[in-house]
Image (tube, rainbow, N blue to C red; front, side, top):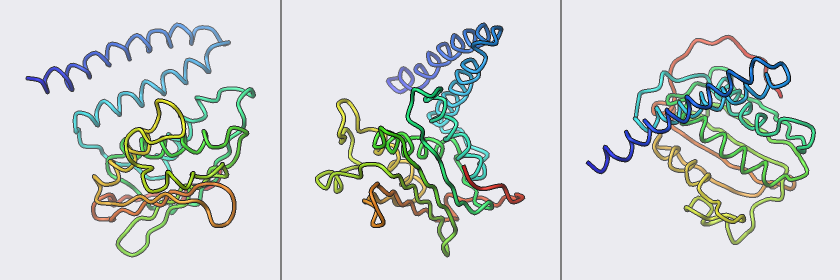
Length: 221
């Protein structure tokens, strides 16, 4: 009974919130001045729906890593809608044939890593994403040009509520939890080639990957 009152009840109430946001976005869309904001709200509702599905353990059709990256990057850019925000640039070098099951879960992984990097670059900077196949595994690396990880946090960075900011510290715990659900590992370290942090994810292809026929997509950002 307790489960029925939490997950299904929470999802029901969230759907009511999403519908209110959709209605508001539709009204904003009527005014060209707010059309861009309307689209950003609708994209956020779509992400919320995907998270809701993940809570229900609904099987995901999977998607290419490139398309998952597109969605995660657009989330970060929606949160920085104008020139008042320091510019965050994205660079990617991704094998176009890499695809992942549970695409909404991996979108959460990337969004949390990107937001963590953005907070470490208050003056703007670059987030790099590399991904390739290495034998039986996928290797995904996210790097930034921020302030790096304080030495005293490195060993406990993925524990809940470990953060340099008040009321933070769940994002990287979510990252580790999702990666471990795919029988993978995630490691955090400071970059050896300059300032910034680096997160290295390794996941078995047979667990996280799926066969997909894709044409090569343009890389860069």
